Image (cartoon, rainbow, N blue to C red):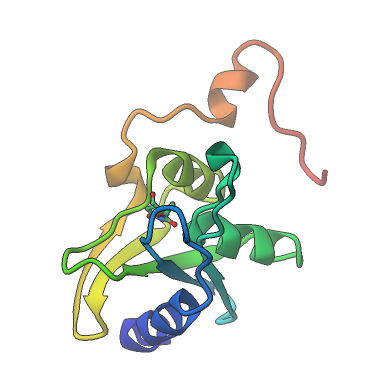
Amino acid sequence: MPYEELIKKAIKAKQYAYAPYSGFPVGAALLTEEGKVYTGCNIECASYGATNCAERTAIFKAVSEGERNIEAIAVVSSSDDYTYPCGICRQVIMEFGNKIKIIAARSEHDYKVHVIDDLLPDSFSSEDLKKTGGGYKDGI
Ligand code: THU
């Protein structure tokens, strides 16, 4: 799927943002390696820390429906500037692959593409846990 189309889906998802506290609606659209799309918006909460970003909403929707092979995630907000995933979202994105593309878009015609590895260098991962005997168990 062309990135322009994915960005359009992120723009559409932004309309569902629940952002009464920040007034900063965000939309995300996740593309799987098989070509399926999962969208997400930010969902805020009066207990601010319970807020969920658009990117994680999209990832949690995908993973909870059995999709872990993520190719790219497009992110849009109402800001005039590009919006990049926050630190927590970068960590969650990285959990599913260090080559996932992040498409930070101002519109479907104006976007920047990055690889998550470049946005979260020297990241902590299951590899670190393996070094102490803990870590990743396949199939769970
Ligand atoms: N937010 C996202 O949903 N994604 C980002 O990439 C940046 C921040 C949300 C969280 C919160 O609802 C609002 O934007 C302001 O931080």
